[in-house]
Image 1: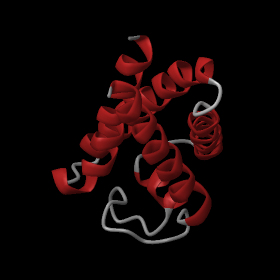
Image 2: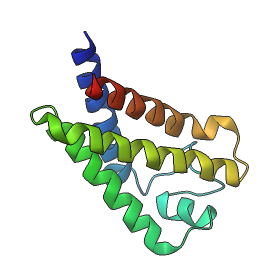
Image 3: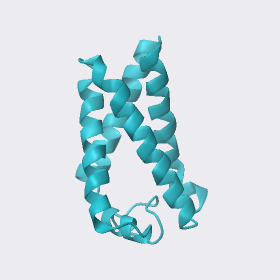
Image 4: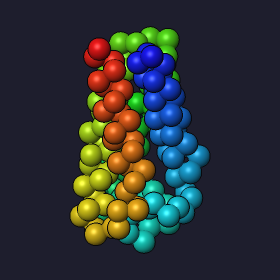
Length: 124
């Protein structure tokens, strides 16, 4: 049963990351930090330097792809999920930094929890 849960979480997290960073990065959502209308504005709202947008985006896209590749090649799952968990911890911290209401960082918190669960399942 753990195998199926882990695989399902990999798909949800992997596709979720790719959706946000490839399809919806220009879209306004209720979850953007501060008053940001897109991802680039969100990074600016957090006071992060412009290159961080590309570094974090590249890492999230790569990890999203690796989590999906991990459906067939398991050794990439643990490192990818661990990186996502660290990035989501940072995302939650940024939401807290700018004083966002909890509702704005629910997605990041859920992605953090799912990534941590993937790490635990992958280790078992």
